[in-house]
Amino acid sequence: MKIKSICCIGAGYVGGPTMSVIAQKNPNIKVTVVDINKDRIDAWNSVDLSKLPIYEPGLDKVVSESRGRNLFFSTDVDKAIFDSEMIFISVNTPTKTYGAGKGMAADLKYVELCARQIAKVSKSDKIIVEKSTLPVKTAEAIKNILDNTGSGVHFDILSNPEFLAEGTAIKDLEFPDRVLIGGEQTTEGNLAINKLVQIYSSWVDSTKIVTTNLWSSELSKLTANAFLAQRISSINSLSELCEKTGADIDEVATAIGMDSRIGSKFLKTSVGFGGSCFQKDILNLVYICKSLGINEVADYWEQVIIMNNHQRTRFAKNILTSLYNTVAGKKITILGWSFKKDTNDTRESAAIYVADNLIDEEASIHVYDPKVSAKQMHLDLNNLNSREKSLNTRMLNVEESPYDASKNSHAIAILTEWDEFKGYDWEKIYASMNKPAFIFDGRNILDKTKLEKIGFIYKAIGKQ
Ligand code: UDX
Ligand code: ADP
Image (cartoon, rainbow, N blue to C red; front, side, top):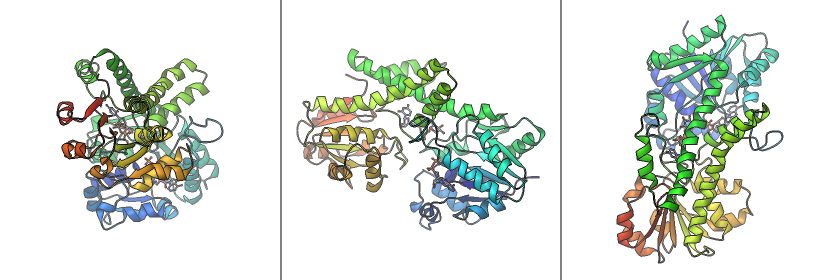
């Protein structure tokens, strides 16, 4: 029997796009995405598709095709759970900010609440799918809660980690490198796995659907992100060496990436990786290793985070030293606040930390980002708790255009690789700035020769 009704708890960056694509590819399955956040659900239901709560290229088209047909967004969590045969848990699992494992372990309170709610409401057998990134063995905890608090109905637990990257979510969902489904190695477990395989088979080739046991699936997600982040920290560590020796980091990356064993992707040096996953998942991995007493393994992975923090701080310090060791009272422009281009997500974005460092030095920060709201930027900075909120409000100015942001400024820091930055009228920007005018390219996306010809002092990461 094929699944006919699905619900997804959590209408965020993962749940929203994933369910939209599942609904688009499976018109015969009713897909309901629920969230406790009413504003978010209202935004998913907005008639004006430019008002969807997350910005993701191509998402509007996918949503408009299925919404109202077999894709629904709602705040009625209980009804959706009750009506569905398969329930995806796609709620947030941030790093814990309190108690045991503070700053390292994943906070599972939202997941646990979901499990308890599912147990309370369910009156028929259900397949529960872990979609959020979770520590290994979380499925066991979910199963315990469901079996001990439910009213006798049968639950199968699957792990189906999401590998989409923000900014390319729709493409990643439509053409995944692989779909990973972990389940219990029992007859019932295998039946549940097959039901989820059928859903993905509507558009994914069967050779790309990998089935494993539960723990392998959970651990693979954490380690995939750890490996990816490790590559960025590796190339970023070398960027500092390049600056001291005269080697060019982009040339080094090209040269080593041509070795087919290394591969060319994910070797772009930057001001540091951000996003909701890399740091959180590595901290989680480190915490698990420490809990198991394998400290050498924990230290090995922790170094990836240490290097990333160093890259952000080093970038801010470079601005300070280049501007004659003082930025106090100087206007500094930040172009780009999101953690990468083509998304409005700012979680763990390097821009937050660079701005914070520069405000410590009493610089006046003026930011322009094409997709991030002023409210979000202030929230991000305030969440660091570095100083009085009123001081943040005074020091962080959000501008409507790059030209306003750079007028009378001493330096520009490029912190996100938005394509539009390349097309600006840089002569006009230069003319409006204080001299000497600096550009610190945290993404190495601009044309050094052209900018230097205009008069800028141009500094890229990993270049002398
Ligand atoms: C990541 C994983 O790629 C994805 O598979 C997983 O499901 C979630 O975490 P995401 O965080 O959305 O996705 O974006 P990603 O493209 O991986 O970029 C993460 C950060 O690394 C960004 O800040 C990006 O700018 C940075 N990055 C990426 C680099 O600095 N250099 C690179 O070469 C690649
Ligand atoms: P991700 O990037 O993992 O998708 P988000 O924070 O963007 O994370 O989305 C998670 C969503 O889950 C949020 O919109 C949040 O309101 C929602 N959520 C958390 N707990 C619950 C719950 N118990 N019931 C319904 N929605 C929840």
